[in-house]
Length: 294
Image 1 (cartoon, rainbow, N blue to C red):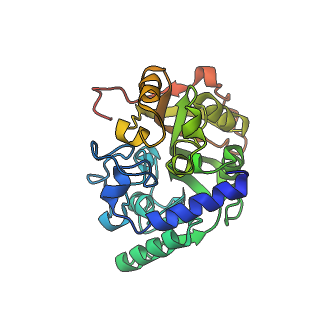
Image 2: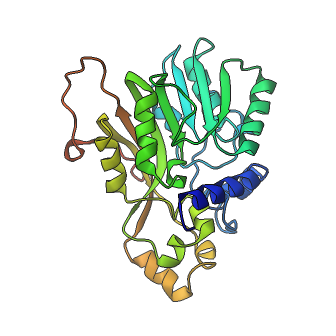
């Protein structure tokens, strides 16, 4: 993992294999990339099965949230899904946007794009298309989308700031995004930071929560809202592949937090005179244990 191209090739190779894995294996590992745990079923993902528009065949168990649930998609909207995988979030977005809307899924893994296209064809969804390309150089013109969504993908991209800039570019004035992703509070052990599986597993590529939100603010977005937050626990039987028993204990007691967050933000509209909300004033509707949203 020496440079950005190495990291991208690593992720592309791993996700080509993950495309053909079952949901159970993916959900019981870190984003499908690590050895599955024998102790838990869902490490990161949320349950989509009661979500309108859900397509079982398109759910590979790779997400860490339900961004479409918070995305405020309206009938007729054009929606872009970053890292669209087999198409699950695109199909949920289509349900919200209706047949008069349009959904564009972008993924740089050919096997994922092919799988998503086959799913869309089976469903006869003519207003959902899948494009192969990098999300830090989207194959989309300026100011195309009303809404951008993404589910546990930005952590896999080396240059998060560039992706967020691309989101700003493709959104229409007044458009918005809702993104679920993995972030950190505190430092990971070096053995996890340097491991290829943990990078493809959505952990080693995650950045600090504060830095993540600062990138969004610096890109020009306003009304930044933390819509949901939940803690992610990596089971000891997975950690044991990378850490000694005493290091696992130190990690679990050391205060490092791995979180799934869902963040909402708006691109200013033409002539928009609303004051820009700073991070210190950021709204939050974080998921708390016992609230029913976790």
